Image: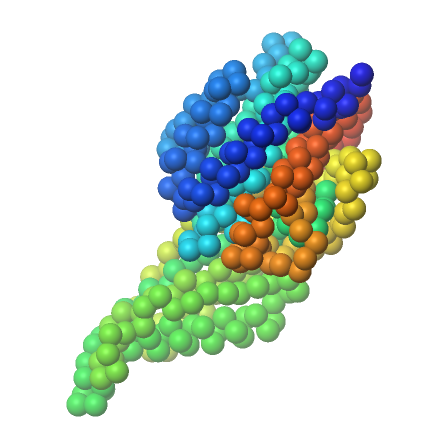
Length: 388
């Protein structure tokens, strides 16, 4: 029996454990950076089946690291990535509970068949994807540098062999002015809100002249306390996205910085610009590995679409600049339902999640089996990565 067939056939042995994990995580959602119970539960499941896993990986309390397969004579290292944070109010509306179950199910099967595996395989818990992006300090700290490949599967409404992502940087702009009575002595005041509002108009002007796939979005966090007081403080939070991290870093943000400082000068206020979270990079998209995943989907009757341009962001983009990384999507439904909605969350806990979890696991196992059976595939991936 071929390795791939044996791995796929092992899904039945562990799938109920994966379904139960999805249900537990879904019913106990935790916000980004607060996934203490989720991390603990996943580590418990991994340890239960002989995978040495520990919490507090890389000095991140809600991250974990587990050794799935250890082969002393192998020079190939693979990372299974795991997300498990939820969203405010709507819980696992991004499907991370099921996505985590997919990575864990793949890990359990690979561990069960470790005698047939030629690679070193680790599973890494990467929390806080929805907010700050904790894969980023891991990537910057060299966690992924040793890996020949990293992979995880995300839920969607369409199957796709890989994702494309927009880079983004998020900033808070805090203006300080001078308060005064808006009717009795307005000339004594300097409106922090005016400085912020003028900046928002400047962002609109930047958007008009920016390259395609540049997205500027944000909101006012603080704008005053009363209508008869010229605001002393005002604060806004804005995200700047593009399909190129270099474009955001070297062209958009310098433009934004100059504009905001000019708005402060125009309103005789002061402004402090604070980065929020980490800068997310675009995805280093590798055609060679993507095609292998597409072939797996085709062979297992998963109709798929190729994503031509990014319409969201993920911190796996930063991972993709340190090692070849893949982020295939598996369809939870064919209905026109957006992620990050209550309707999508309802499907994550429904019976529809079960075949979705199985299909996601098939994608990972089929991909890794083909890498093991044909060393030329991994060489092609590494060559493209190094030349891209």
